[in-house]
Length: 192
Image (tube, rainbow, N blue to C red; front, top):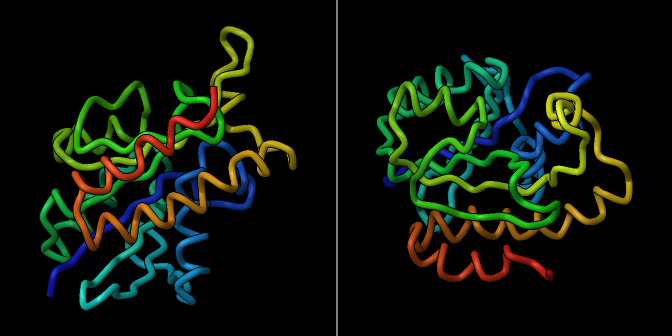
């Protein structure tokens, strides 16, 4: 059976819930809700499993904290014997406006600590979905911004992108990265 590992990056604990840095967790929560599955606390993360048309899909929200996300990703790739091409990592991105997203087959970590640690451990050749969180913060305030909570208004702007991200996960599993990028990256640029 083909297996896929879908990783949403974030930090564990209620103090980080609904923060911009936990956008990856929020996408996986939405996918799990839509799929009627629940996460269990397992090694290095909260894990949920489902299948899409005979393909096994493992959702992972690492509990290693952002800067050590690679430990969880590497462990679950190895444990489940999943190829890196069937790994999709979902992260927040200050370089993209809120509500926009970008799907890539590989690339640099863009200064993101979670992606940086994954890259240290497995290289940069894996698909990733970067969810825009905007960068409307004063110079030197990036940490406060990414660890800050979304306002209700911001969540309304973000929600459509989360809904599309759920569709992207399904498409990635069924159609692969190239077709999914072609189909969704135009949508992800948003208006403006």
